[in-house]
Image 1 (tube, protein in one colour):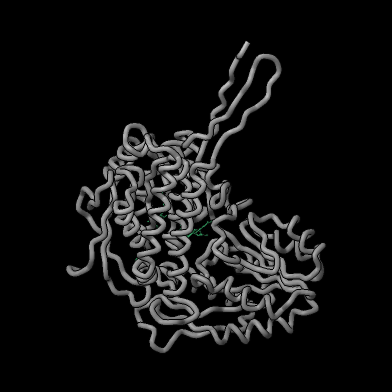
Image 2 (image 1 turned 180 degrees about the vertical axis):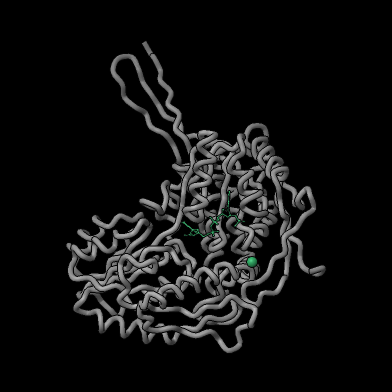
Length: 483
Ligand code: NAP
Ligand code: MG
């Protein structure tokens, strides 16, 4: 532990330990070995960070910057992230267990968020509103003020990018609480923020546990708005806390997304995309395509092909070129294994599994991909978010049945429709309640430009794209009497 790098918080433009000096040990999911430490911050650290964000917003250099200048800061930040791409990707891969090639694409996503929002910063404006008589009204799009960003461990840098990119572009200042299970890349981005010239206090990053640092941040009376990405359970707690202060929130929660395959689809094209939709990030994705709904007439043929592909999939260490990496923690591994065990107890048919690489270190959190077939629609396997590489296949009879099944969970985040019938693509997309619907694709590209968020238990509010900027702002209406 003594040689491990000690990562620091970013508060008021300075790197610092927790005031208490307490640290949390960081282990790699790939081998279970400790390799770094992070500050175990408390309410006192959060208080300092919120004070620094408030000062930056109201009195510091940040609050005085024009939108164009803010955009330039983000563009510089974007170039710097690209320059450090390999280093950040190695760090995130080691910290989360995700494979290096994916981590690299995640870091590109982070840089792209800063580029997208940097370019948009000075293009946000309000309206003029015609009125009767001697009145004229106009609206200003203003920042909320101090934004709290609470982010999860599955995509630490990408989710950081969409939250701080949009919030900074609009002129808010921020306090970020990353997840204790994976925050090294976020803390390293904090170090780069200083080099990029992000003014002191505009961005503060405070590591620690959810129960201590997270709760202190979400209940802080001087926070104006909360952006939360994580589990529905924590989302509910944060909404209750925010309600006590009457503060606005966006909630990016979980999903149980359906990939709907009709008999007229291009099955060769669909197959690899459907597999990637559940093994990407080892299935620890809010928008994982964790249910595949297949039209009855092609069910046997398609499931056989899926099974063959699943048998070839290999989970292994982040720095080797396997199909997927380790799960983020022992805790997550236990959760996923419990779902698999329960499904076996319920006699749900396990059709195929992949493998764990021979050279995978014994202390790693590895699990091979699992494909279950003819999964009962009401079972936990088909209803609950597993957050692991576990795919449930369910047959459907016709279009109406497909829509009913797709909508038959508490969630509504993403979906896909695989069909070559244009009219059906539109009919089905309109009837599925999900925030994003892909047609003959799934999670195509980074999609920084695409509004993203849920219906039902998947949450509310939209991030990414220009919608993400609107969420990070509030409208002020000014009415003139020009008589
Ligand atoms: P989580 O346990 O809800 O944690 C999310 C964040 O909240 C972490 O930073 C966590 O800190 C913090 N936290 C925990 N308890 C808190 C409390 N009482 N008050 C304030 N903050 C608290 O979720 P997770 O396990 O990290 O992530 C997995 C879940 O997130 C899945 O359900 C997934 O679907 C969802 N997710 C959704 C999206 C989306 O965009 N819709 C994206 C990614 C993940 P610590 O971890 O340090 O305790
Ligand atoms: Mg870790």
